[in-house]
Amino acid sequence: MEKEIEKPKATQKEQCIKQIQNFEEKTKKFLLEIKTKDFCKYETGVVQSLASIDKMKEEIKLNENILSDFSYNATMFGIQSSIENSQKNVENSKIEIDSFLSLWNHIKVA
Image (cartoon, rainbow, N blue to C red):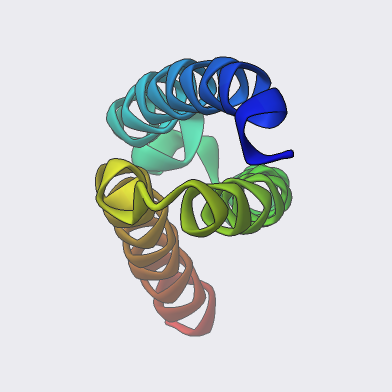
């Protein structure tokens, strides 16, 4: 029985690795794009900046959900280390967005 599933299992593992690599590139690009968004400019103003930050937080939440699925798959195939960079990218994105949110909340109060 084990021999019958070896080839499909290896194929699925390779597909999972490729999907994780693509996701890693997506999260890396997302992290780099944060600093180019409108909420990085003072001229944008509080209201628009906070709205843009909310949209980014929704995207981060989506990335966290995808990451959770990939983490499960990586564990199942014994390739947990393949997901580490994506985890770092998502976590760093959260930190960046939280920093901008704090900044705009401070400006709003001032």
